[in-house]
Image 1: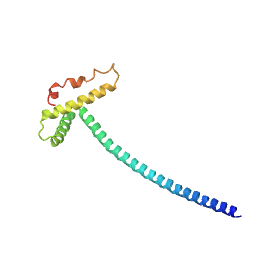
Image 2: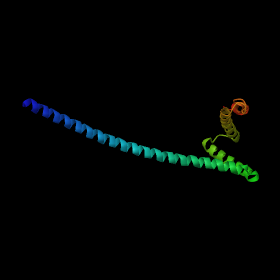
Image 3: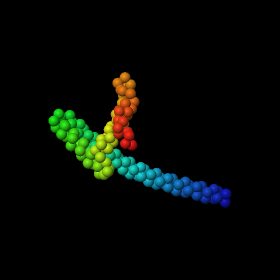
Image 4: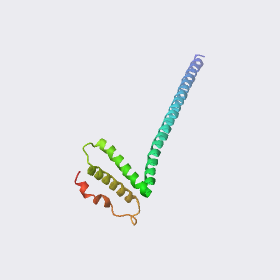
Length: 142
């Protein structure tokens, strides 16, 4: 009889431990699920925020391209945009000249053109670094 009593106590203890572990795992999984939902919603908000900022930048660039395409208004607006970009650059480089700004813009543009030309098929493109090699006066400044 003591043997059965001992087995019943052990089985009861085992059921209690397994039940408490199961409850603990359920609470832990619910907490993790809530954390995942919270992080996912925060990530979605950040993506939307970043997408809005990116769309604003792309819209401004598109507007610049459209305005510059118009013959007379485009020339004036192109000069205005370039002057505004120069003034922003001048804040970061107070000792820089217009020549320095022009060289920096030319080098960045040449790098972007080289990257763009590397992505198009070979029969349509010119040789690699063709634009970067043409900017010799600016390369001597660096």
